[in-house]
Image (cartoon, rainbow, N blue to C red; front, side):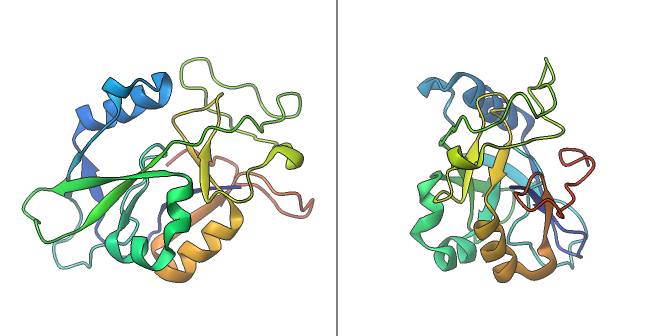
Length: 188
């Protein structure tokens, strides 16, 4: 299981309208239809001469992908949720989408994981129940930490294969005892 964020390569990233991010987080918490985002507003950051990334968002609750990724990944991406258009200031020709992850799966081993933080639900050390993992989904959310998207390894391999060094994949958990999870997977 992984957390994804833009890599340290020289690609532009997106900065979101703060009220839109709050709305996404509220929807993750409540699930209320009135909180469900229909569009996301953003602006490009970084150097203007840098290429625009295919995975330009580091927000754990708001994975954004380019149209190229949507087309090349295929319908499997939609098993996790739906695509919400991103309106980018001054870039009408750019086609990017928020993957609004709707699938919430209770697969965290609460006895062996660190206790979720009260305010955010963040789980610093996650241990998953292998028998309950949704291996067919590219991504899902946990009821204990609903504002963070968890990614399955096969989806991470597919995305990094499509984007190269544009994505940093931080290991959260693995059944392989030799695998070492990232020491601060949700930090920047």
